[in-house]
Length: 213
Image 1: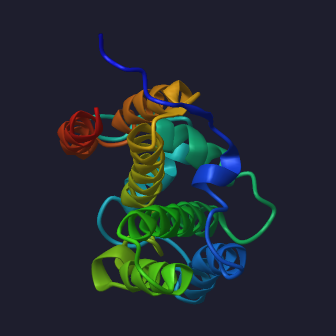
Image 2: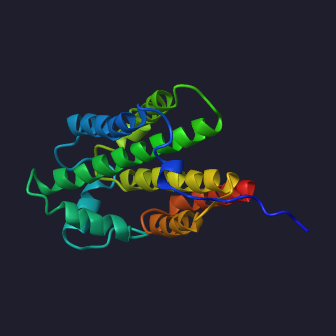
Image 3: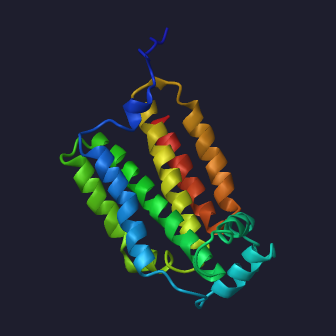
């Protein structure tokens, strides 16, 4: 008979607050620094690309071009209610907020990965790596205007974090990890309501799951 492996109860601290005294401050900085940079460079009004169309659709409960971006439109409508700036600035702000959150989740993902590699200076290294992504030209350019890619950045970071949490728990044979798999499936479906390019993430996610299980 196949021997049962010893299992331990999964605690939040096992996968999140699992490093050094610098983890929490570094995690906060990974979200605060990008949003401050994006706010400094935030477009004051309508810009090129699909900005005007998306702002109009969000503000008026309309439907932009295919595939329609329903999640972006609904969240954009919520941001349009903010009592600051003009409507275009408010929805530009949405890109900055979600892109910054994506960098914070990328930081947490790097921490998990570096822990698995048994690297040193985990929190500092992860902070530098995630901020390098956040200030890269392509990432920055989509974080200061109204475009669907800011929200897509958030989903990508969140999906990576959930996926790597599940993988680390699975490799350590911890219990109570199904919630991470279900969260990944829900988020993968949600991100498809924002942009169809997220389809390329699903094969990657399945590969990571297969590699651990």
